Amino acid sequence: MDKLNTARKNLETMFVDKPCYLKATISKMPIPLLSVDISVSIVQGVASFEMTQKYVNLEFQPVETIFYFPRDIQSTITKLTCEFTLRDGSKKLLETRIEDSCKAVVEYYDAVTSGKKPVFGRIGNVCNDMVSIGIGQFPPMAKAVLKFTYH
View 1: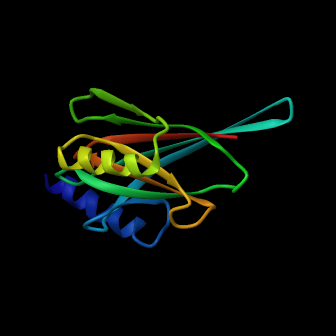
View 2 (view 1 turned 90 degrees about the vertical axis):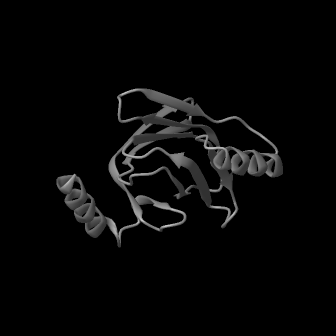
View 3 (view 1 turned 30 degrees about the vertical axis):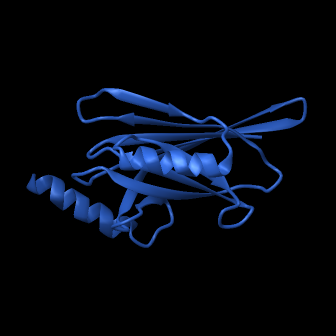
């Protein structure tokens, strides 16, 4: 346990001033970025991008997080997935679906308060070239893989 706490403190120090992590919405603690992978394909003049980011929650309890993702205002996000790998090695995959904005916000907060693990994304809440992604109940001591596909 002491080694884990030391590693957590070291990661917090390394990432505290860098914009490459999720942040817990309540404690404002960083959720460190482990890796980034970007792949691009071009078919008939249309570019498709897939960005994969891996994070780890070093907290001892679930945390709600927010992630801001810059985008070109002419791009379209076509898919967002979040896969959690829990301490026991089991995996949980969450995939996007399109909802009315107001209904989606209500469903997200209802799921968070009931202990579920929702993922919520919104374009233009801060400004039109940013997407905000909320991950509710990011499990403790778990990893998350976020994948964004956009054109």
